[in-house]
Length: 231
Image (cartoon, rainbow, N blue to C red; front, side, top):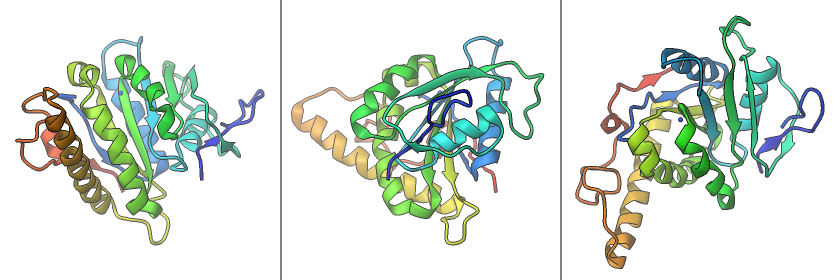
């Protein structure tokens, strides 16, 4: 299953560490609103960008479309990055709010370079995964999150980070606490694997960062602000 994308047309077809992150596990709409208010809290009106990323099929495009058009729009798989600047149209975001740029990055691993290219200008980074497919999506999300969290631009700029557990309201979906714990475990596994490879290759590692093999086991609390869980 791949990422839904929109068709083209007027309702455009479907289709931001020493970080200073705010981590949120939530269902779709609260997450969108949370990300929006994070933006409202930062600086001036310019340069506000939300970047949606994560495994294929997690619901990134559905989030993008709902935030842009205020309603559900049928979508299909997309292998292309989608970006637009608009005033969010969803409950809790009135028309008086200033426009923000929202970028929907495909979940295909081969296209991760597109995500990395957006990090230098992101205000809020939103990692989306499907809470009904936690074992698989946590493994995939951890690989991407490691790349993001250890990226020099992210560590220097410290954009906000949101973890969105989509479909949390569906029966059988993992709880926010479970999503957090599983992601931390998977990130630690990726960290051990990556740092071991770097150590063997002789690459230098940043002390005190996620890439530091001598640091304590990874927990989101290490990224600084308190974690917020939205039901």
